[in-house]
Image (cartoon, rainbow, N blue to C red; front, side, top):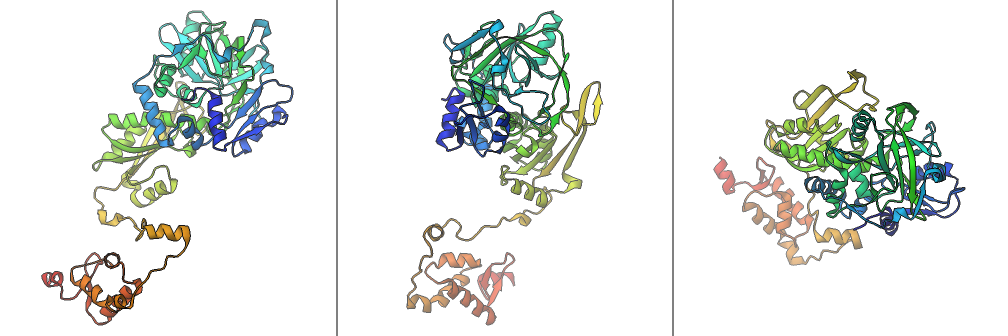
Length: 525
């Protein structure tokens, strides 16, 4: 199994989805190139920098599927596997990320190709670092927390206020101690996704990564701190968060929802060491798309678990990119009448989901047109809408206007687009195109028209054979065609037309053809 970002880039290259730029590029253009490129981009030469840069490696559903070696809808089950069966990480002595080591006054963060993402950024930002911290009672935490370059040996870091890292930091401040951290930049997407997964305090994303892989995540002991780093990363930054709190201004910065956050106060990170591979590349996680795709499957995994706890049988769950892979979730379920509302109540309690849609299992939740069609044809607002108010929200959600005791409150809605219990199922007969999967259709699409030989004897006896079919019971027109594959379509249509003109043809309550005077008609009379 692939273990490094480099392995993933090799996979992208094999799929023709990696643009390699060998000409020297000024770092000011990197963000725009990544944003505009239909492929991931590797910059092998940067003006005034010895290291390389890469971006866009997680910007599509396909890229994530290739990283896991499975279709995208199955990735959430890999996350579930990691949650159910975590694997303890393993320390290794020799790690590629320790090929170059700089400590103390040797540290100069300006040698790293840290880019600006947005016109109004407060400065260059590190966006892809997997930050690892340790609490003496709660164990390890790993997560994504952006960092702004302040000077040669200092970053500011954005742990939020309700994350595990924020709690670790508050506990360290209560002890009057700095919090030691390592920041691994340029990691394999599996490890990045594990770090992006919300886990309760006391559960480690490092163990989750091992569970997702089915083998231990390899870690390298810290050089200057008592916290390990990911052994196969490209770059590692080690440092401490001094116990002074959220004291320095940081931002603006683009976020996962596609908007720019304002200036915030955050802690500082005093850097003690930087280590990296000899030809390291700095991965810049491009907002919003790269962030979305690594957070979607973990949300889906939590949604599956919530539905399972509610006794709901789910067939598919999708955190949609239009909903930032965070605010919207769609689930296809099976169950008795009323299951849709129970499913919605469960989904709206998952993460920061604001809008949930539940459909029947015949809907492909990965196709937005099908989901919209289900809403259009199966949903009635006065019967199928769930509205919740004053629920916990996400502080950076720009639509939130209500705060209570420092906590953001949001409203939530759920749409039950399953078939109503009191609606006749006959209204929902799906269109089925005749001969849709017939080999002849495939031949026509591939090679052109296929001649249908018909001899004169077959042509002359067509009417008799069609009448015989209809006297045998009610038949749809297509059923007659299937029963008489050697009879031309026109001969069948002409016979049906003649029988109708002669007053010998009737139709039953389902619209099927039948001859007058058939046993069915006699029974009806």
